[in-house]
Image (cartoon, rainbow over all chains, first blue to last red; front, top):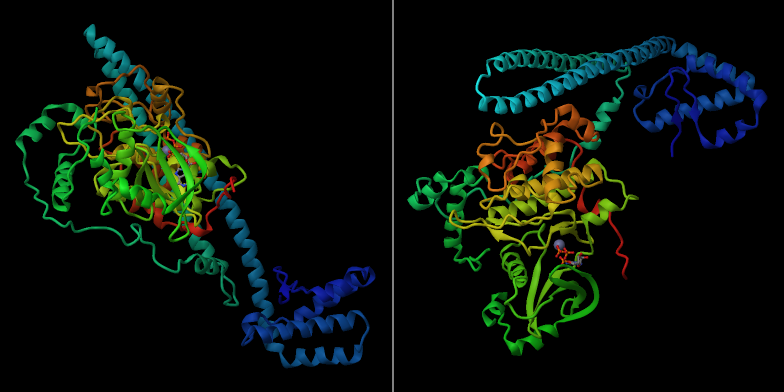
Length: 289
Length: 328
Ligand SMILES: Nc1ncnc2c1ncn2[C@@H]1O[C@H](COP(=O)(O)OP(=O)(O)OP(=O)(O)O)[C@@H](O)[C@H]1O
Ligand SMILES: [Zn+2]
């Protein structure tokens, strides 16, 4: 378990077990340490991306901790102060550059937060409107159903002019609601797109891996998904005769509306017959009551 | 009767072989009882493999119930697939039949009912995937299962789901055949069956899978009708009443009746009901629960749906939640 950095900008406090223990009961020193930490971190502000590897970065963090610890516990004060001064002199340019980047990142961080908040509000508002329209639509459909039932009653007594009028009005209302809803859905989609774009502009200045990237990598499956588990027969062992025509069966199915309502498919049955003939199976059970 | 016994495949099981075959398996404890069979666990002596022995209750084959046993044998022999229970052997004993099946210690119903187990969307996707693959294999062999429900979807110790209980299965009917509409446990019965259709297709199984899908999402039965009449009401209240407009010729079905008219649910209502569902989850549920069987998706279409491709990926069977069998 390596040391972990606090995510807040410029609070590069390193959470490390052994140091933790010493500090917990050292209340008096904490405030002092905070001040020192702040100052030191403005100087020692290299980021992970400034190092060749994690190991060196960790060593650097360790070094910072020692400096802070020494200064806040009055150990080797002179030596340590000199060390810091020298480091500051040697790295003047990089320090300034990094401090700029850090404050920019912090700004971006805040912008991101605000942006996400405002997008969320807009999204909720749109969703609420869609829901309301849905409810209205539902009421209309109920009304329509009632009208239809009414219609059936009316047809028996002739005269349904009046009701045709109603139907038109209902249809118009329905259409206008549907239009509104679909416009909102489009807005919602655009909103999400815009958010993606805006957020992707606010990236870290240090070229570190973005969280989204990391998630994407973790989710990428190792092997491609195969819906049929590699077991899908596309080519049948026999030639399908698409023009196969059995007048008796065909008439039977054509004449009886029950077949359509049951989803019956004569072609599928022909396929079954063909496949059974091919495989050499005969129907063992033909009697079903 | 000898004719039936000879069904068991390449091996001949005459009276002599009965002894021989039954000595290949040990019949240990009873694990369950169904409508037409008692089930025991046993061991295949040659391989030490754990097996289930399904002993058909009544002797002789005059009784209608035995039709189920014959069906189960016939179809299980034809169907070999990872997601369909394996029929290892058949032997006759004291005038009765014994099916040797692979041992599958628990079923999906037990999992659904065990509220200490949490289902992730990836778990549900995995069970749906395995169910549809098994069913796809049935349908491409023109076999209708006709009794899909959580308690007939058994699970292996490795988490692999297997369709079981082919006691009601049969092959796709010819136009001049009339099938009985009194199939499928009520809550999983497709609307064409509720209306007494005698020429139904594999679409009735897809409906059942759709209802099971919904049940996995809700952790409670989706369309629990109290009786046949109530089943119509419960079904149409949830999914809207069929009309000639959304289901051509529906009124020509023998048992059609339209006492209740319910509007179809709006997308938003469905979203609210299945609050954990993504849009493509809802799309798949809806296409499996289309009232008109011709509009319902096929197993192929279901397997190719966006639901299975979009993240999260289906859980690997061995990582799925399991139940440790009680009787040990
Ligand atoms: N392969 C198997 N391995 C382990 N246990 C099994 C197996 N098959 C069935 N069982 C157990 O035996 C019980 C009876 O099974 P069976 O399929 O005969 O009837 P059922 O599905 O419970 O009811 P029905 O026949 O009315 O649908 C099951 O509930 C299950 O607990
Ligand atoms: Zn069963």
